[in-house]
Length: 113
Image (cartoon, rainbow, N blue to C red; front, side, top):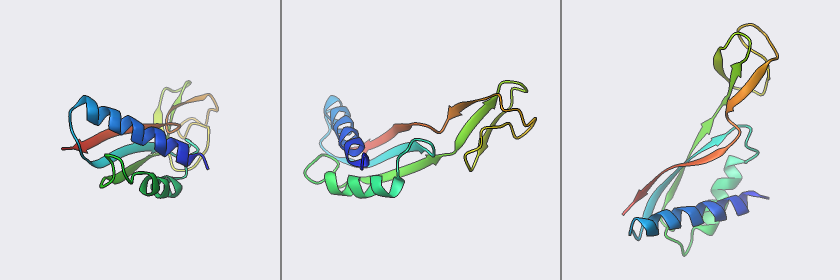
């Protein structure tokens, strides 16, 4: 389960940002996770709750914003989001599309004090 290593890296990043800003408490961690990131959101939440103990994130709430798969058609230039994995243009049905968003995980914001 790679969610454990992802959470460990996330907590380390949060603590580094907190230290850089001279704060001692993180109350909220907001992340954006793409549907094609390979991350199981429910497992990530469990891992976060497990590994946050004893860290600056100990009392933090984890907020996950799920990013749909966002594609750009290289033929008709339309940019669109899809709920399920399909790699063709919804407008012209071209297969000539590229992924714009939805494959990564990003730390979007922290609430700290």
